[in-house]
Image 1: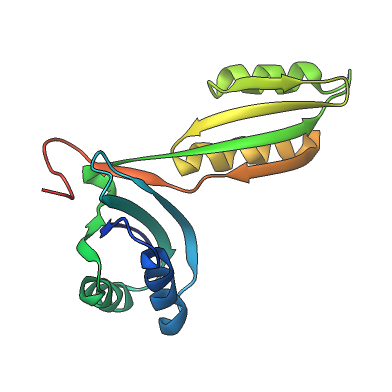
Image 2: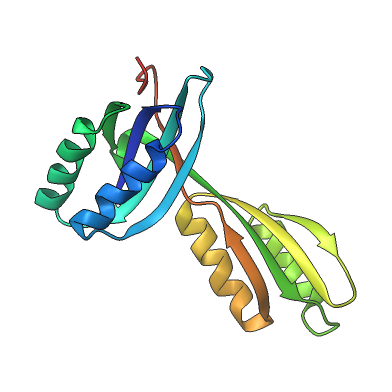
Length: 163
C-alpha cells in the first residue's frame, strides 16, 4: 500500500542522512523523497512516499519519531491531504509528432519550457497519477530524458505538521 509520510525536522547537518539511513536499515525502498526548508529556517520538512503494509509502516513511523532532530512525524491520508509533483520531460521533436505533443501539453495543462528543432521540453505539475498518465502519452512519441521531483503534500484545512 502506498503511503505518504511528512517529517518535521531540525534543519541541521546529517538529519537527512539519519532519516534515509533508517529506511535502509529497515529494508524499505523509498519511492520518492523531497526535502526543503520551511517558513522557519531552523526547520525542514521531509516528504517520503513508500509502499508497504500497515504494520511495517506503523513501525517505521515509530522509529522515525525516536530519531534525534525529528520533531514530528505524520502519515498523510489521501482523502485529507493535497499532493503535487513536478516533472520535466524532453521528447523528440519531429514534424510527425509535434502537433500531438502540443495537444497533450494543452490537455494536461502543462507548459512547453524549451523548444529546439530536435526536442521539446515540457513541464508538468499535478498529482502523481496525472504525471504518470502524461508519461504514458509521451512514451510512443519518444521520451529522450525526464526528471521528477517527488511528491510534496500538505494536509487540507487548518491542520499543520509544525503546530
